[in-house]
Image (cartoon, rainbow, N blue to C red; front, side):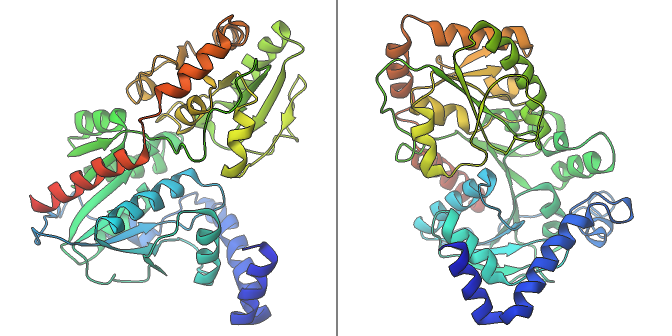
Length: 402
């Protein structure tokens, strides 16, 4: 649905006042992070009332046979949110397996018309049957409740229901914050007694070894319908996943590496996508694609020989998608990346400008560039999200029977 049609639909239901209220709520949420010095997107009373340390709760399944009903708690999705894309993907897997899901949206600010969220979901994500509403008090009864980010763990823990608690963990979220209140509050959620289902093995390793959290993992997949190998010619572009608003994606280091790379290859086009970087000081020519739709990415990738994908928390979903399109990703070394995928076409190297630049140069100038691109795409052909979904379903159903 176009933005104009969405606006007309909302106005038809809520009138001009409803649209203005939604806009005001969105602004209030943006400003709330600065209000009174608070930078937390979780309600204070939810934190205060979550007495996991002095009054621990045990969450066990009381229904051993399915089908089951699952309540999911998450923040409202935004356009291009990879985290929400994955959430809806796995909710769909549960529904296809015969289970029922409900979605409760959680915010520390004001709510706004739920139709705005529904339209965003319908236009950006996989179609699901789950109901959708704002979390306000107690949820409808369910066999289990999924928390999906550290802020949601607090209201999920506080629900009076004894339903089993799952934690769908996509990243090590304390790393999203400086050491301080938010870091510790995020870290504490791994001690709540929830059963973790993590994106990749690194998260299961760190949560089980350091926090004694019961965890299991699914492997990353690739949507080969959206990402495929179509260009069998020599490529002379390099891609950079540029997210200056997301510190864990190493934007500054990436710019340093690409500055050095440009010195080595002044005639190679550097393509950036992930965020609008036109207002940032970047000392070399580049193409700014800002935030792209999924439908555009495969064509963009197929023009590039190599990609610089930095991650200092859990590995991004992009490297395997890039491989599917025949692009060789250059990635910083570390267990957070290497424990997620050991694909031989991922080019791991030290997180220094020189090492990253030389790795990009090596890929670009390889005499086997075309053959490597083809083999890279073939190497992920069997890494489907359906296989990941089957693993996820087996974990959930196994844990519900415990």
